[in-house]
Length: 185
Image 1 (cartoon, rainbow, N blue to C red):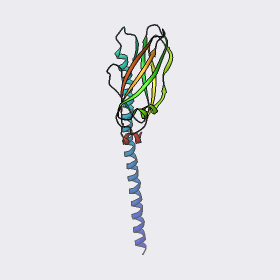
Image 2: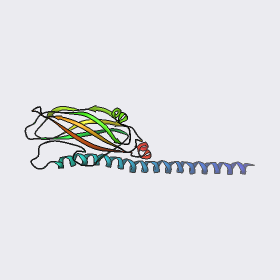
Image 3: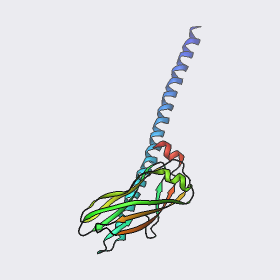
């Protein structure tokens, strides 16, 4: 009778050790997958910074003025699931007070325009642009997760220090990041 109890005790200890090892391996695997997925998201943030650098490249050596993301045929793609910033670069040799205002946001495809208008959290920039390059956050969008692919047309009105008004048209694509990636990070 004592032998049966001892065998049952050894089996349960072995089972517990196996479960602990299995759970540890599962947790390590999840951490590994999460780190890979989050590094991909960080890479997309670096791509966003690259987009801003690309805007800087739109200017020639002696070109001054305002250029916005997605303006002039540049293809700009932003991800869904959070706050996304759309900016304009002000390049000036004198500095001055600039105003950038979102006049209209329109959906060209995908989500309806009424829904897209609700994404706008903050719009417009008014401030001093110093000599050289000034990056102005013009529009901040709060794009929900699981948003289908959508193309946006943003009409931005610029008022320069002399009071001259110009219009900038930006075309920006919104793409879904993926449910698995969005849930992990």
